[in-house]
Length: 186
Image (cartoon, rainbow, N blue to C red; front, side, top):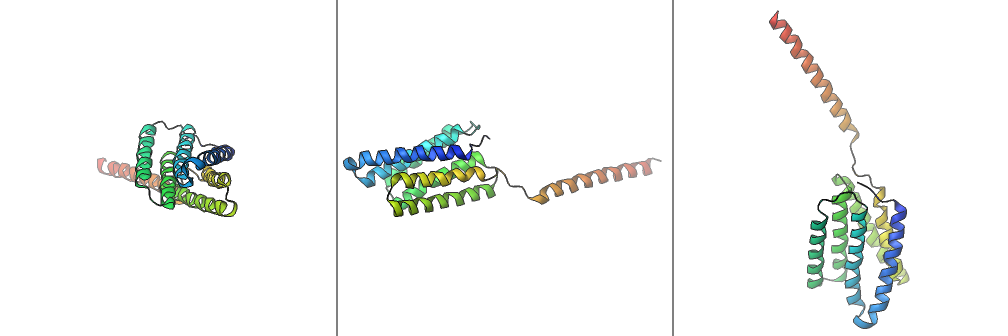
């Protein structure tokens, strides 16, 4: 698994923020802010997922994951839930795909879920304070870039001790079996 460096995440956040603000500024006079936001969220999600796939060496299941995401995006768009739920569905999709492709356990995936919640909080804070789509999008993806700090797998310290004690037990058992065989064959 090739994990992108944090600096790449900062650049991706800036690029996605720029494109999101440009799309919102361009299309809002024609179709309204609510409709534009419902187009920008899946567009930015798709761009981010493609970035994640490009940074991950795992090739298995990419088409399936993107297909399921596309079906989810179309169904969510068609059902038109309230905007917070709409955003949560797409953030959940990002979290799920990143958990499947970058982590090897439940604990790192839960840490990533925390990062996703923090990114939503940062987005709400940025949009409420500044009203800037660029800053809101940038804050969202900037916090998302922190996922590289989560280790792919978290092992307990005692796991190795259990493995070592099992190996020691197996070795002692083999010695005892050998000793018993020698006693009974003499």
